[in-house]
Amino acid sequence: MTKLRSAFTYKSFLGGYTFLLLLFVYLPIVAMIFFSFNAGRSISFPFEGFSTAWYMEIFADKYIRISVINSLLIGVLVGIICTLLTISTGLVLRKEFRGKDTIFYFFMLGIIFPGISYGLGMGLILRSAGVTTSLLSGLPVHSIWAIPWCLLILLMRFDPELRSLEDTARSLGANEWRVFREVTLPMISPQVLVAFLFGFILSWGELIRSIFVLGGVHTIPLHVYGWVTSLPFTPALYALGTIIVAFSYVVLIVIGIFLRKGLKVV
Amino acid sequence: MSTSKSGRRSLSAGKRLDWILLAPGLAWFSIFLLAPVGFIIVISFFGFTPGGYIPGFTLEHYARVITDPSSQTLLLFSVRLSLTVTALSLLIGYPVAYFIGMKMKGMVKKTLFLLLFLTPFWVEYSTRTVAWLPVLGQGGILNRVLMGVGIISEPSALFLFSEFSVTMVMVLGYFLFMIFPIVFAMLEMDPTLLEQAEVLGASRWKAFYHVTFKVSLPGVVVGCIFVFVISMADFATPRVLGGAVMTMPQVVVMQTTSAANFPLASAYATILVVVTMVVVMLLLRVADVRRLIY
Image (cartoon, rainbow over all chains, first blue to last red; front, side, top):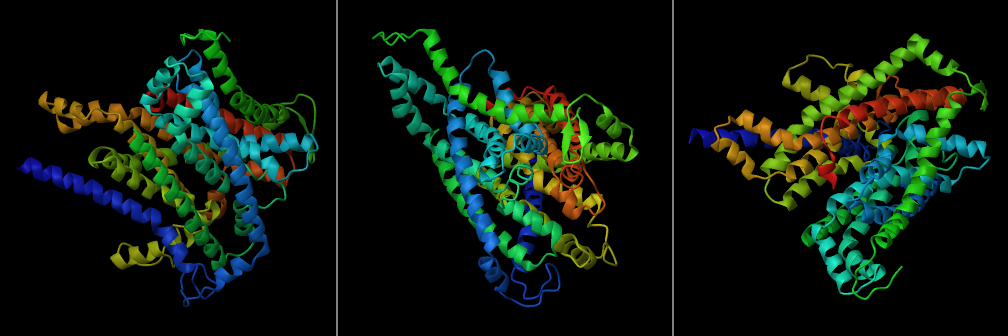
């Protein structure tokens, strides 16, 4: 009886702790959303009344519109590169073979190497080669950062039954391409979408690697960073942040739905 | 490729297909990851000219970093900050991972809870950093709550533009990278193991250490790698919330953009790569992380 009670309080203590931490993590986001409606110019207390004027300012800002379009464009392109390279690499890496660990860690270098280092390297290479930086010059570094994460998700989510299903198809005489198209692809389609969305969202938020390779091209993180480091903050910054959060949540809900589908397959 | 009807294929045909599938990824990473890193290593030995470099071999940039007291402080501070953030993330993240991984029932509930922790991460990075200002500032929420409770009698300025604010914001921003791998490691655990330990007379702490903690160790290692690496590369948090606090990535940016000293910036960036690699390799010796992933 006492043991049961102590186990109960122990669990509720952990639950309370988790809840408290969650509260603290969300605190700045709640503050951001709250002060984005501040009628005054302050991003902190005092709150001078409710207004949506800062949202209007964001919607009217030409540079933000350009940044959003740029970020969407590069995000989609990185998502496509990510999907193709993650799937082709992941299909091999789920098998056992000699040198597998080396190849796996080689891809993980995209996370392990500091982004600022290879961002700088890429920027200097482009500069030395006389290439004018554009949105496209951001593709390589963004994808190097995103692919390892997608690969991790893909490898952890591969259905153990998939291999035996493929073998069955092979023993029935299907060639590799048919096995891929009719067995593998339909079964990993949730992961394909998750890889695309992760590639997109990692590129969408990418700042560190972009500084040296995008040059004058504005993406949302670069634009906001420039704003934060040079101009005084106004609640417009929070209004933009709130819009981005709302957008990100939509993307995340889609990811969640597909991950759940992926889980159901298992 | 032979087209035998029986479906018995030569081993080499399958191998060849595997290499064809691997080739694009390997090429992509060689060109866009190894080449840039190799390039900065080379440039870091070149001579300096404003906005460029003079091919040659000199150790002056490394000598400058190693002998200059302010550079020494900077390097040590960056490493210490990242290690502190990693340790604190483990400390506050592990109980949460344990709660989600071991105490929650059902995969859907676990996934939803993880997503709940994940979502703040998608707030635009600089905005998320700035959003701490109304929380940590002198008239901010934290000061108001602490004064309301009676812990402090007047608003404290210590919460902002200090090492404290940088450390705390980084920990709260990155500890979810600790939670995820630990929860994944715990999912692999055989739940009857704990009961067996109890039957064999192990105390709760002993059972936890020998069963749960050992199983979760690969997750801990992967989590520490993620948090350390990301903290090491962070430069907007110290820039916005750090006041006088300065870290390596900030110096790389400054040396590149305002000083246009590419060889020195490359030397800093190379040191950053080396330090990160050393820490990651040390961490990988703690536990075998492969089981966690494939």
